[in-house]
Length: 264
Ligand code: SAM
Figure 1 (cartoon, rainbow, N blue to C red):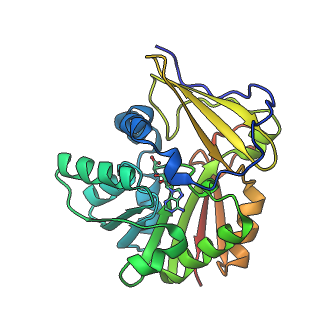
Figure 2 (figure 1 turned 180 degrees about the horizontal axis):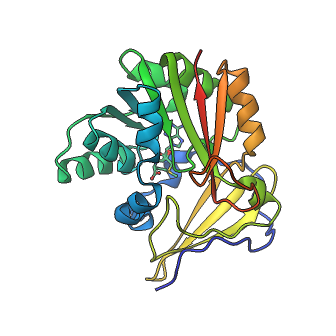
């Protein structure tokens, strides 16, 4: 078995310069089927412990919208802690897996397919908190989309509500100074994750599974300050950053950056 390690393999030219905006097309059934293997729910829980629960409790949040539910890890975990959860995701394959995982774990909450760009057409009312986790936000390649989606999130929050949004540490990845520990978020020990390509516009991750199969995910390598600025421009007034769940961190050392933004 290999330990998951993300390393920069050098800048390999991308075959086509076209920017991939089709996030749904990237989450093919065969990758979705392996997502829980990539995560390893038990190891993920052990690494993040109650970080998100404490943030949500600190904000007195009760009604929580998980907009990038994926296979349902955070939705299920938060429902188990008593939050009133709604799980959404733009991928039909992913959202189906959320339903299955919730049922398997005896949890019942609203689950629906919704693209962030039209989020409020799908949801009901406002929320005390929105979580967008697992480095999902970098699926937006266009700056106009990033701004529009942050506005959607902002409008979907109650006053005083919080948005928790994270991303892999692209500051380090873009400087080719990245080595993932495999300790956070994607904690499975089966697959090897490498960075096959990175430039200022595109990062392509390569997932190699023990059976010889390979998948790629392409995302926009957003910088931490870039997202902080967009959050302020979207109207959020307090932004707090964490690195690998720690308040004090070195941007060269962490795997993930987590932004907590408050709507005034
Ligand atoms: N949060 C989950 C986790 O941590 O395991 C899944 C993370 S996965 C990297 C990114 C998720 O974001 C996918 O499930 C994908 O379908 C979703 N996503 C990407 N772009 C989206 C969009 N525009 N609207 C809704 N969901 C989107």
